[in-house]
Amino acid sequence: MKNARLIFIAQLIGTAALLLILGALGFEYLDRLPPCELCMWQRYPHAAAAVIGIGGFLLVRAGLLPKRAGLGLAVLAASFVAISGAIGVYHAGVEWHWWPGPNSCTGAAFRSSGGPLDLNAPIVMCDHAAWRLFGLSLAGYNALLSFGIAGAGLYFIARARRNS
Image: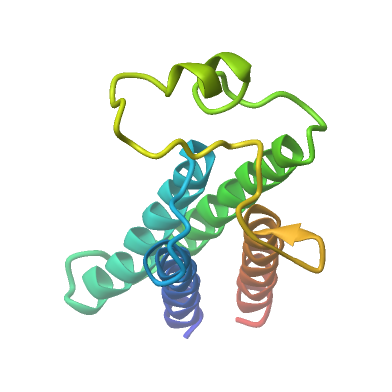
């Protein structure tokens, strides 16, 4: 019973990560807000969490992974979601100019040169929020949602382990 709950928790965390990626893609393609480099950095851990959570669930259901793998899958998926949240905090800090961002997408030299290699590509700066709601940018919302999902996931993991 405990292993089944842990596998289900891993699947939920992976699904939540996938939904966050789909939300980001919605802003990119429906609202025409192209991502900057740090936006892309936030997507990679979510993609890993989705593959681990959903893929792990499917592998256990197919009998290719043992049911006892549920704890590792759930903790790993939650960890990747938390990593994306940490990158979101870093990105929001870059947008608020609290600390410097990567040279590849911030700074006066990048703005004046048109960026590396592709001279026809639109310049998307990491230190300017393309969208804000109630003062928070998409990076800030990613941080809040990611830490909330990871925290809830870890809470339910601990609860599942205690109750069995």
